[in-house]
Every structure is written in C-alpha cells, then in structure tokens.
Length: 82
Image (tube, rainbow, N blue to C red; front, side, top):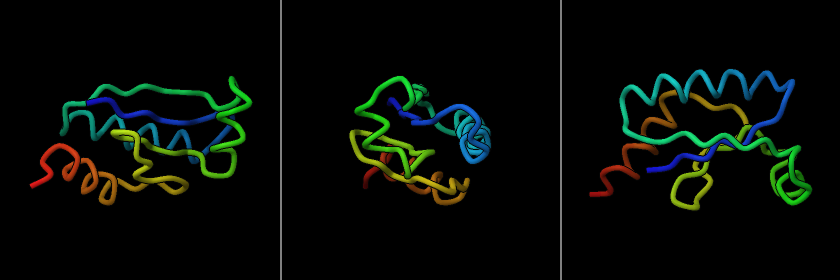
C-alpha cells in the first residue's frame, strides 16, 4: 500500500507528522511517498492550508495535527477493511 505524505519545508507540524509515519511504518507495511506541495502550483492550491496531509487509496485520511492513534486506526481500516 502507498501512503502519500503532503508536506512543505519549514513546517513543524510536517516534521512531527513524518515522525509519526516512521513509527507507523514499523507496525504496518506501506510505502511512504513524500510530496512537497511547493513543487507544484496545483498541490499548493489544493493542500496549502491542510498540510501536513496523509492520503491512502486516493482518500485524505488525516491532515493538520497528525496523531498516532487516529492515523493508526485509519491505517488499520485501509489494511483490513472487514
């Protein structure tokens, strides 16, 4: 499974979110794809106020203040939807 992490430079919430994602990678098997929204006008327009944002299966599952518990539950649902 791919997890897309929308981020930008000099973003403290993004740094904290990346740490949460790194911890979750040890619990769940996913590929982390990091996208800097400043590299694309389209991404900046779409995610500018939402970053950091986490996307799985084309759904934004969490944005802003990323926390381990909430993201873990959402990852679990994506991995095992039953």
